[in-house]
Amino acid sequence: MNPIFKDPVLQEQFETNGYVVLPFFSQADIDALLLGYQNLPDINDEGFFANMFSDNIAYKKMTHDLITGVAQKAVDTLLINYKIVAASYVTKKNGESSYMPPHQDWSVVDETKYVSLNIWFPLVEVSKDNGAIYLLRKCHTLPIVNRGTLIPSAFNKVTNMNFETLTYLPMKPGEVLIYDHRMIHASPPNTTNQTRIAVATLTVPQDVQLVHFFQNPETNKIEKYQIEDDFFLHYTYGMNKLPENAKFLENVSYINPEFTDSDIEPLLEHKPVAVAKEMATTPFGTISSKSDSVWGKIKRIFTSVNQS
Ligand SMILES: O=C(O)CCC(=O)C(=O)O
Image 1 (cartoon, rainbow, N blue to C red):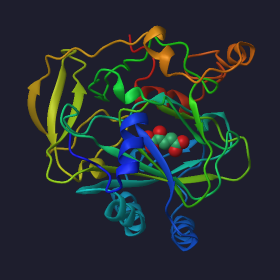
Image 2 (image 1 turned 90 degrees about the vertical axis):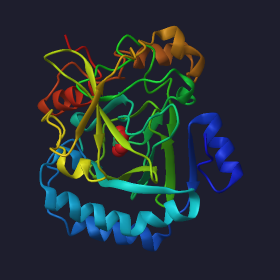
Image 3 (image 1 turned 90 degrees about the horizontal axis):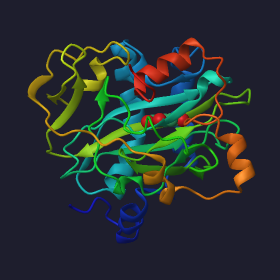
Image 4 (image 1 turned 30 degrees about the vertical axis):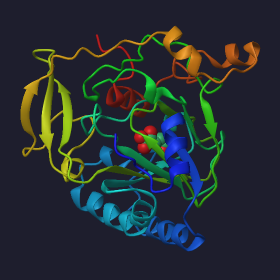
């Protein structure tokens, strides 16, 4: 696999843990992105929101350009031959529906050869109270899973992942998290009254064919599509319909693994048992059973729960 980071120390950290966190952006960068956000139409009324939930192409293009105008320098400075293909504000309003359950981001490249990345950074300080990221350190070392539309999570049977056993990443504005898309990550609900504003960019190696996996509900087969850089501009989560220029390549014969607690156990942070038990009410943390529509939507989107 080609090196991803220009700095060999970051490369080593990334290879070991599946992610790096480092200070990168200036206050002026953060202010520019906050100002940009404040000038956008407020289309996050509740819960968690990312561009992909919207079918408003003009909105998605505007935010993509605005964010890329700032985030591109992280790509140019830190990475070797990478490019941003989608960029979004990822926001959490107060409330339980802003909870983001543990999930892996979708596959967009052939992960036997390449690594695609999320460059995620907060524009406000983030903690357990307003939706910092938690992740399953080193889970990029688990067998590959093809992830995409309507594909059930390979972690459906896992019950020991929660906010006590995942690795907690409180961050300040200016710090940046870069993780391999294979990393399981989650964020707790925002319990504060200030919107948690962060940015996520889908970043891929240059000159590599992008792909999307889709589980056809009629055949139950996983289909592989060739996609273009503008795929996520035209794709809306939950619609389960691919943009017209997505080109069918093949039915996939590879069968995704199904992980169990014992696969995950060596990767967990080990916390006092009493605390962990109290938190571990579901595979996804302490979300109450009082599901609301946004939570239901997120569950469907990430196919993190049983799909039978
Ligand atoms: O912003 C968050 O809290 C979660 C973001 C996320 O899951 C993602 O960007 O894939």
